[in-house]
Each structure stands twice: as structure tokens, then as C-alpha cells.
Amino acid sequence: MQPQLSVIIPTHNRPHLLPLAVRSALQQTYADLEVVVVDDASNPPVQLPADPRVRVIRVDPGRGGAGARNAGTEAARGRWVTYLDDDDVLLPHMAAVSMVALEEAAKTASPVGVLTGINKVNEHGEVLLTRLPPAHCPKGGHFFLEEPEPGRSHHTKQTLVVEREVVRAIGGWDETFRSRVHSEFFLRLNPACTLIGLPTVTYHLLTHTGTRVSGNPKLRQESFNRLIEKHRAAFEAHPKMFAEFVYKHAQTSYQMGQTTAALTHWLWALRLHPRHIGAIAVYAAIGQIKQRLRRVAAPTRALPPA
Image 1 (spheres, rainbow, N blue to C red):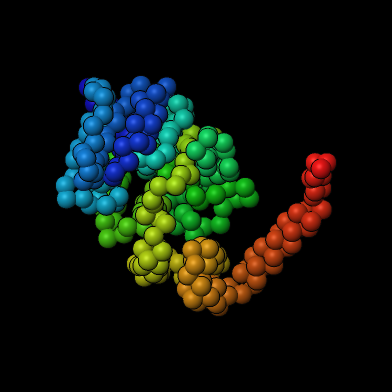
Image 2 (cartoon, one colour; image 1 turned 90 degrees about the horizontal axis):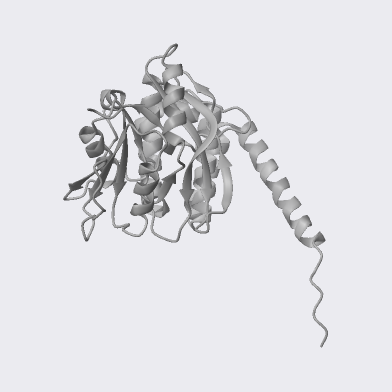
């Protein structure tokens, strides 16, 4: 009997983290699922305890994260798919709440996908921040280029549950991208699919000291430029959010030590939407001043007596 949901886990050289991700998928309260682990040319190859619900597919030579997701999509037997990063974990109710919401949403919208909330956690399991998805992104939109409601975030893309055939119909994941993979995918998904966001946290995104593709400065710049080139019409249709997207990229570039790129993109963002970027910059400056004042006002620890 075919499972309703396939949890696809692309992985590369993370033997210490992958078992946690797989275990979280197997511990779902929703039982009608399979787990498809796509080993993207790991060295040594992935080895997991035998479980009838788990299949390991090896891709060699490696195809990168997007290619591994495509391989998993093709191998999946479920009507619905979700993609779990190998260094993250699902909370036990993730599949159950998503599938209930999909069943309800499908009565009024088709096709439809569901997003849920994310906790960013450290290696001790402490929650650093919480992100909840936009409540409703109708078919025909451009997801992160649409303005979200207050308190909602587009940085919840990892929680997507959507029909496998919808992913295939839009061409799958673009394997020419190594970074910005989710952003590129959603700029093709939302025009073809309504997205419903639930105010329920179901996913833990783990911060760790290991390597991440998103931490490669060169790849980030290349993928940023390629993303805008490929979807320029969508970006230009949303000048305010286009400017904010460029501004946030400039901030990250600065934090990664790419000062020339940061300055170039700050100026670009200002040209795109001066009023919005000016307001963001003023708000950020006020926040920094408040932080400094709090540090100055914080009581100092008395030194112990000599």
C-alpha cells in the first residue's frame, strides 16, 4: 500500500546529525508515511539501522542539495512530499497537523501546500528565535516578495508539505543553484500553488559549527545574482520587497566580511525604494542605540573582596 506522505532527507557527509533527522521523521504521530534518505555521494556512504519505512538512495556522483531533492522526489511513493534538511529535526506533530490542514484547505483551493512554524535552536536545544509563516499566500503570488503580516516570516520554507505532482509540474528544484535553492523554488511554486501558513511550530532548525552551503560567501553572491536574473520580472513587480531583499543581502555580506559587495548592495537597495530602506536603516540604528544604552545601564558585578 502506498504511503500518503514521503519525508525526503537529502544528506552529504553528516553521519553525526543524519540519524537525529531520520529518527524525528520516524517518530511522527502520523503513521502513513515513508522516509526517503538521498545520500548525495557521502564518504563513507550512509548507513542507517534497518527500518521498513526507510529507504536510502545513493546519488554518485553527487548532484548537490537541489539534485538530491529531485532524486528523492522521483523516488517518493507518497502523494504528498516534504523535505527535511539532514541537520534539522521535525517535531512529532509536524506531519499530522500539516495533513489535517491540507485536507481542509483542499476543499476551497487546489493545488495547495502547507507551511508551519520553525524554532531556531542551539546545540543544547535552547530556542533562539521563532518564525511563523504567512497565513495565506494565494496562487499567483511570489511568496517572499509579498509583504507578510506583522509577526510572520517567509523564512519558514523548510516546512513545506505539498503534492509530489505539483513539484514535478513546476520542474522540480533548479540544480544550477547551490545557495538560495528554496528562494528560487518558491518563486516558481507560489504562482502555481496556494500556500497556507499555520501558527504552529513543527520544525527545529539547528545552529551548529559544521559547514553550510549558505555560509560560502562566493556561492551566496553568485546565487543572489542568478536568482534576480532568472526572476527579474517578479522582483521588479514588487519594488518595496525587492529593495528589502537586496538590503538584507547587503547586511549578510557585511557580516561575512564582504564590505565592497555590502556597500554596492546597500546603495542598490536605496535606489530601488529610498523611503522603505531609509525607514529600515533608521529603525536598525535606533535598535543599536537602545542596546548600547542597556549595556551601559546594566549593573556591574562587584569584585570579590581582596
